[in-house]
Image 1: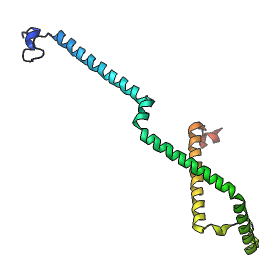
Image 2: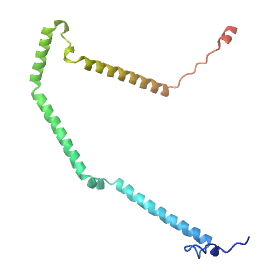
Image 3: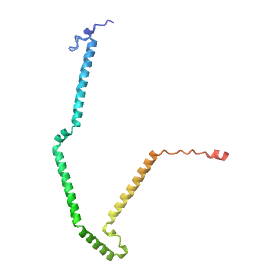
Image 4: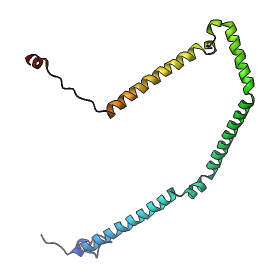
Length: 165
């Protein structure tokens, strides 16, 4: 088998026609290196943009203004409601005391409870949710303890060996 010179092997390719194998490998390596450098530069640009707070503030200015305004309104409503409750505290306490006296007058055997105020369905639902939450918390605690604390394997002695001793 005769081998043609390096330049003749690439005669049918226009780009590599007058190149040897080594030159072609070097050119390919240079091209890959340039592409890698461009990719690294693009990644660096994107990293810089992702960590640039000013850029994100400029991009999302309307959203930030809307969220800030909503937060101010919520804080204002909270403060207003707190002021309202503070000013009407005495009235609310008198109303609660009057209702307590009415309950005591109507049902002297149940002075401390106001079970009639809450519907039966709501009470049952609340109790079912509490039962579910308690059992879920117990299961989670049991599983976490079993994973954190290694179990002690107690070696059981077969019954036949116990009798022989």
